[in-house]
Amino acid sequence: MSKSTVLLKHHLKQLKLPTMLSECEKTAAGAAKANLDHLGYLLQLCELELVDRERRAAERRLKAAKLPASKTRDEFDFSARPSPNKPLVLQLVAGDWIDKRENLLLVGPSGTGKTHVAIALAMAACLAGRKVRFYRVTELITTLLEARDEKSLLRLRSQLAKQDVVVLDELGYVPASKAGAELLFDLIGQAYECQSLVVTTNLPFETWIEVLGSERLTGAALDRLTHRSVILEFHGESYRLQDARRRRRKRS
Image 1 (cartoon, one colour):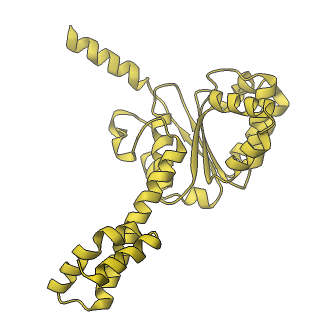
Image 2 (tube, one colour):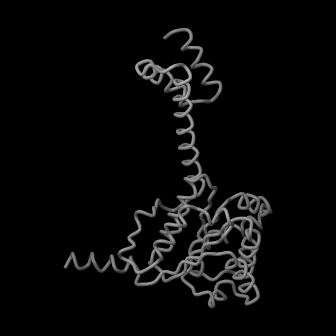
Image 3 (cartoon, rainbow, N blue to C red):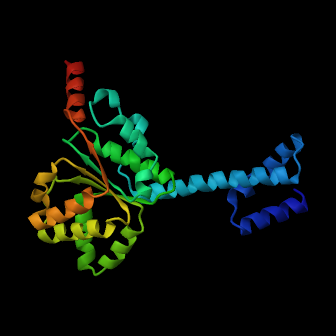
């Protein structure tokens, strides 16, 4: 290894350019074969660093989002379900709704694909450079209550406010306590026109009072969520139930 190569690798390490560090010799050899000048070589090396840096950043965003599974748009079988609206879902993948600070409300019976679509849109947002955080509503309420008791609620709210998208999954499966419902409403109010919320729910809007308890609180929450929102309706029988029937038929 030449002295210049040793020094170059030292400088790249100090500058925290790991991809350029690992690829500089191989890229130099390729550039020499292609008869590229020094600027062409440097351009190739910078492009490798940028591509790898974005890959690492996307991996960090996906990890920070705490998605419960990896689900993509392509894995959703639109042909097996009469809903949701496929062209609309494909349009939402582009992420314009995030720029507009719009909310997404995914409404329909259990097992019809709401969480799958929510995760797929969250993953697409992460890969596009957005900050995302996924919560099941019961988990979020517990976290908010614990933060309140530990006097760290302001810090948690500040962390959530820095997200571009917060996913609230499975609203409606467990009724919230009065304190929990109020903290959830505070989060919805904080997000209003500042960031996007994605809410999945098995309850029609008129029955949300079963979760939030108060008619006043429910009305105010729905007013903020539905203003500047996109509503995706899901219909049909539970996919999990259909899958269980198919497995039973195969065994018999």
